[in-house]
Image 1: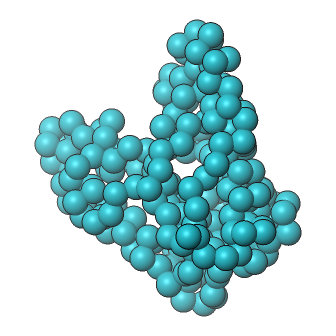
Image 2: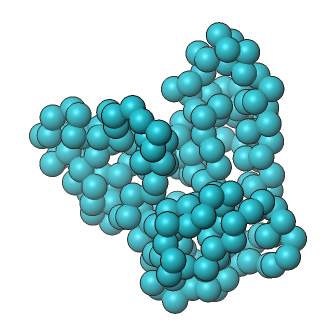
Length: 205
């Protein structure tokens, strides 16, 4: 199964799919942090022009799309940036690939209007073995919803708020956005095991 992981510099999802036997390429404008997975540094759409893939997993930037930042659109006049981000997101969702998953935090209503399609599913890290809370939406094309693999919600609820919401409370700094954008390993492994092998090679019902 030939898989492309777009907008990923960490190589976390790419490694998970490679571990289950997929032919994987990650792509980002940044160099990869994982030397074990083939990486295309450049425009994802240039890569898609050159190669065909069976499955695409995309992590487009969320800065102007997520609901948590909606107040800045008016205050900082970021409407043009928001529209550009949404059109990039939509282009990934509509890429010429049979199976697609696009992930992002919960979007605001302006983004949803431009994207034109509501997310199919909301997942949390605690559904996949990480005692943390970080709502992530999945837009799916010809893929089944991701099934939880290890629910540790009760354990998460017993932790201090700053531990249960570690990503949200990440200290300010130049690498804060990188830390917050990395996919949890348990989620990556669930994607790979459920979408990269077996029934994932067939169209979802």
